[in-house]
Image (cartoon, rainbow, N blue to C red; front, side, top):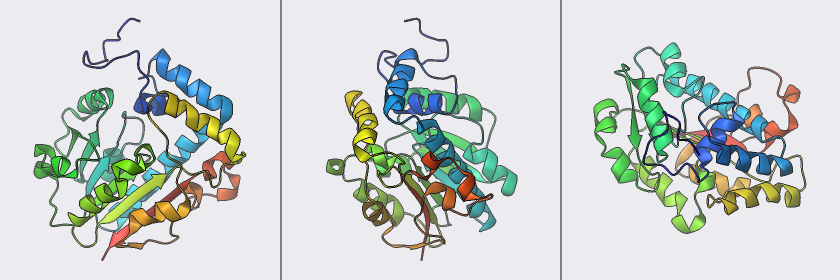
Length: 270
């Protein structure tokens, strides 16, 4: 397999990556055949996966605009993935010029492309970091330069927590990040779930098995378990709901049925 010029030498291009699979679902070009093959296998069980990812991105943009309208001008996006149309710094900057954004991802391709996209942007930067190591993220030079933790921050954990197994205690990681945030901060979160998928759980489980096969287990939590991530937060209306139902700009009923898979919500610290 020939290595594209944009692929960092440090990555194994024979191993699928969830960031690049996500990029493929969204119609991006920064993925390899091994990623596309894994995505196509998952779509054999859940053909609506691209619709779910599109709904996820649409919710993220609405939530960022909401945060900006609430006066928040600092954004910490953990699990940001490969840059695509409508990134956080673009959406936030349109609503609140001068907004500062730090992206965090552990995928070298995502980090490398973020660095390229953000070249020349003084108000945005990227950290190669791991959600399960909150202290390292918060102590990074990029966060220290751009994020004032004494002021409200929008913490984005969009489509990342369902890749963290219970044994790694994602609740503790979210709590540690939350404890570092000033009052008035927001937690913006989406999470996969069997609830809402327009398929029998057994069939949807076939797609979950694909992720297990590529050693990136997809953890499908219940709405109740997802709500636990918001402990200590006051939920912003309409609460924890399917993605198209969170402050929609159009008619949710017109959305593809797959878009209602999983949950999205925004919480505010007291």
